[in-house]
Length: 504
Image (cartoon, rainbow, N blue to C red; front, side, top):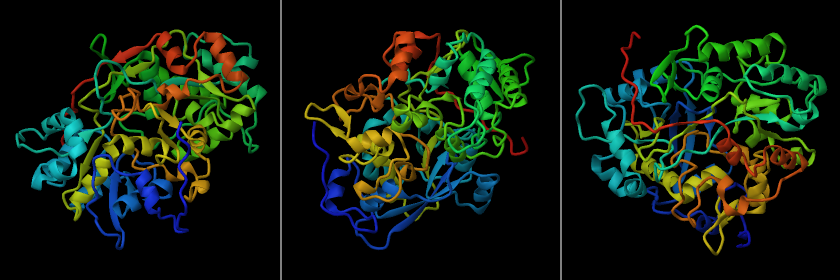
């Protein structure tokens, strides 16, 4: 494999040198900013963001060097969307949490930029135009009722290169396997079977690394919508029913289960968390947590469980924890049917768009286009090319030593590469995706963007705990385990939520 690229010098301000620019050069996108004068600050209003303020760290340095731009992230806190709508300016880059009412109302109010106007897409979105045409075609159909104009205002997240397979599982039922092993591998058939197991785990591990009480799980309200996100998501991954409005939809039978259905999936999930709360197993700060605060508790070994891999194993399984034999690994209840989403070339419903009032539509499009290139997608997921990841001589993707550390522990310092802060500090806070991680990377040797599927990542167990988990289930990876479990594949759909009256 290629050796990690070395760069002679980096300015103390964190601005990257020309050789770093070569390592992070665009694959099909050009910068409209041209000169390196005073940086341009763009406002990014994202309904998916958990962060407020100026983007920092390594991704900020890359965007500054490539586009001479600084991103100011504005999350959708209580009333933010309505306030910006009333002001008539949503921002420069605008990310919607769905293609429903908020999105269509913004179109109706004339607050989104038409990507066909002044050949914006043709001249500054060439990679999107050439590789995401189906996603653009779908977006052109998502309009307010009665709007038949020939306009395109963006595209949805998680675009696939093919619809033949499903996305990688992220509802992975992660549990502290080292503690579960100490308990003698008790059976987990029903959701409720986990309650006593968590109580027993707390008995043997009552205090976290910081001397605080441990809990089964810590929730956060940032993404609550029509329902409590974590409660709804637990029902989704147990039953295999996906969220739809104020309930859950069974794609196999076409049955809709309202959230107040007696003994229905949502209320059962809600009772599960209520029982955890009554037994002192639910973090009492769950109503006021932020995602970052939850992550801090997780990383201090303060929780035992997460239904999501990104809030469980992906964050917890650091080199330090694994060296101590501590790992979060999958344990799906026998009667559960975790959902996996069918891949869609038309993309999902979380929309990338550009505000109509921006003074820099070309620059906004250049940035979004870059995020859609293979380099941009991998860079925003894993860090700078040549520093955190690269391709070997056969076109296979691999992590550098630093990149592997960052992948295993987002709190890894980036200072040795000339950046400020940790890898986590530099992760792009817009919190939306372009390509699905499960999509095939056209610049690689047929590999997915997802590092779990790279040839270079098919390795031996990281520690005895992982070896024990693999041996217990007879698998070599979480994806293989989840495929063997009962699971539901929700087919991709072009369904778009209908508009609602303002009063509703």
